[in-house]
Image (spheres, rainbow, N blue to C red):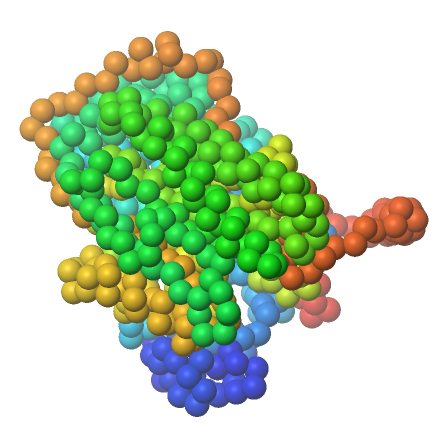
Length: 618
């Protein structure tokens, strides 16, 4: 990079000091300096050279990789009518583990053929501490030949799980583009989305695409993949749900050659300012569990809500209920594990806990702010799988040797706006009440509760962190994972010491709330089998319906308008106000329709709203 004078502006609005790019904290006020690398979408995008600065803000690392050197400022946001062009990104935010999200737009005026460039955050990049060597993660095709047999099937499994939600949003073509399919260790990550044309891709085309990987497949799984591709091309596999179940059987065959040791450690603290601790955890604080020898492993973090110690009652009641229910769920042997059934049962367990808290609220005549509730995030490791279920804003993070990924999406107003396709996430965060919860346990009957359950395949060492917002607020996890949690994977720190250190970070750098964490460490050893695996695919197909829709493979969209705020009591909105708003909206739509009949629509992917930008006629 040629421009050595470039500096990173402190995001603290009261500081805004210039800092060297390699610094992690502001040299004036010690505020963390986020490094937001962005991917510029568009084949026509061609900045002058690395080291140049675009729009007085974005440093060019190479052709399409940019660094925001003013991360404290809100990016330029597309106009409301332009959101339709990027709505698939927004609605697929539950899959952000694999799909980058829209950061904003870059307006280049008349300097480029495409005046406005879409910027994506958290693209699949390998970031070097020197900043200058940042590059794209390796493509799936290039990484394939060096991967283990279980990793190869695992990558296909991830693609299969993305097929249905991306098909619904009209971007499933992405999964057939080798340039877009990247891998970051265990994870398949997409560079950007490709919009489907007139003919939507089919599973038969996916079979043809996967067949190209066959020549470098591990010999012990090559016959299985060959049969799978042929059945896809012949139309014998007619749903992604069937495809996932077949790949699950392949993974189950390989799991016999993987040895997994799991450690769980929990810790909770009231924090420096709160008089009592309304959080709760399982196992109880300062407990270390190792599986084996223990038969069962379960981690839960709850953040209680409600006055007069109600939060403490709710969080402990939730844990007491869930632990008892999950014991029955984990009594099955590994050969009897049914992933879809476990996901369903976990949500039912959470619903049971919700109803117990809600019933106690009703029996004690609790209303408004006095109504007690709790968030929850829990991790259930089973064999080579991890099941995560959550409600509220307590989070789960997945730490690998390559990165730290938040795998849960907060049940708050901001996230709901993005899920519904109404707003970019960073824009939604600016709105009043963006952090208010849209759901928590105990606030209403379970018929209106929407827990989120996810399933992950673990084929390498990993750490899962469950935490209340006492730690996760202000991006403390993203700031400290590399120095504090990652050393667990290299045996440089014990899980107990890391747990203690995370509590210290929460209390000293945040300190506004109770804090509770649970760490789940996977130690994985895999031996490549010297036998060819066999799967009775015809039997799997016979056991499935023609086109079942698995709710756990769909994009979940919460449509309820009710919010749960930890301190605010909501009042009812008068009916007259809805009438006035409705008439106003109708007048606006009529005026907008009339305007559209007078104007031509622009051709750009993201139409310009700058007077200096050029637009092409339709």
